[in-house]
Amino acid sequence: MIDTGSTVTAINSSYLSNIKHDKIRGISTTVKTANGGELKILGKVALHMTTNQITTKIDAFIIEDLCADLLLGSDWFHRNNVNISYQDKTIRITTPQQQSTTISIVRHPNPQQIFNVTAMSDFVVPSMSERIIQAATSAPPMMTAIFTPSLKMNNKQYVIAPHAVLKIQNNTTTLALLNTTKAVKKIRKGTHLGQIRYQGNDNCCYINMDPHKNQLTLAISPKAFLSITTRITDLLAHLPVDKQQQLQPVLLKHQTVFDTSSTTTIKTNIKHQIIIKPHHHPIQQPSYRRSAKEKQIINEQVKEMLDNHIIRPIDGSPRFCVDYRKLNSITERDVYPLPLINDIIDKLGGAKYFTCLDLKQDYWQVEIDEKDRQKTTFVTSEGIYDFNVMPYGLSNAPSTFQRIINSVLGDLRWHKCLVYLDDIIVYSTSFKQHVT
Image 1: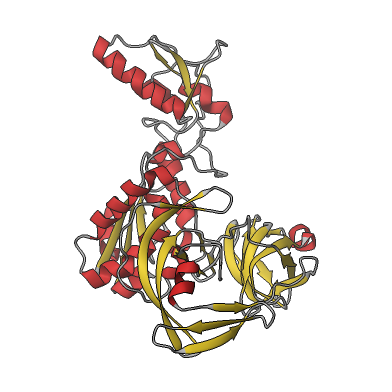
Image 2 (image 1 turned 90 degrees about the vertical axis):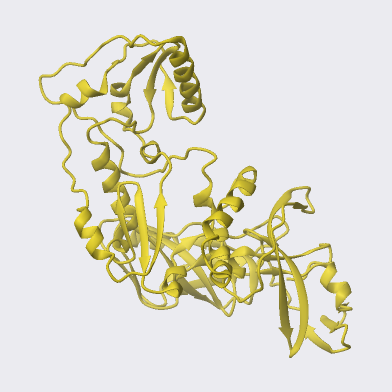
């Protein structure tokens, strides 16, 4: 994309991770958009672009979720003596070496024109799963196209496609489809998935999707950027420079997973339940005596949990106040198998590259069923509180979490990764396989 109003050239971090490039230079700054907003810069990289056998140099700022793969600004214009002819709808480039070429300007379609989107090939969507697929359309290239899903497919197949902003290239695009049933759904080639129309990108950014990796790129809190990039640099310090260059764009692309600046809660159909054994009554007991220093620590941690919506204050109505050891003694056991350590060790045999992931405050990412939250009540000198999320110390918490993490990782377990509660290890036999 060419933007005559931009003073800098920028590249989408997702696009950068898929092309060869020089080493990324660290930089901490922001750029202002036309509407006064700010975009966080992830770094800067030197690139070379070839058009009609003419190569030009690009110094591009790296921006996550940029509304185009590459945005050429006025710095590139001046360096290459670019001349735009609106009458001829052409762009003429003349490099410092006096090499020149002329290219045509792509015209945007009429915003009122509608194009159908269909399945490019036969594919299946596993039960209770999301799949990112390639779709076909007769639409010309568009950086931002508004997609409206087919209600017929949603209602008949129970396969849901969201309203989305898509990028059209070579008459293809990518879509995320969600199967909400417990049966495998087959989508035939040519199935009507929805419609698209052109949308100007002045106030629009799209999500990049990769049908091969089946994943989306998410935004990240700007305040956590510096600590995350520092953490990524530390993570790569033990690797050779060439491997650092291959991994750095991947980690930058998925830097959201390193953002531990605040606690998050996942939205899942599986919520932790506390089922009391028959003929048992709620347990009540006063808070323990604590020293002034211990009370201060407790109050500070309670405030932090309140701010992060981990707990909620009691409104004065009767609630259970329990000691979890006694609660556990009257709780029905949830038997769910945990992986055997020996099986995990055996599976890792032959692998040469490993990445270890440890989830931050794993239990706090899982909600407690609303009807059972009162059973988690605890008392401090400042008040009475319920847990909104699964606290540590409940007897069935490991079973609930292992069930969820197994469902999340699905078929990746025992093939590409192994998991024991909140500890995940990704293993590969080659570095190339590990990066992809």
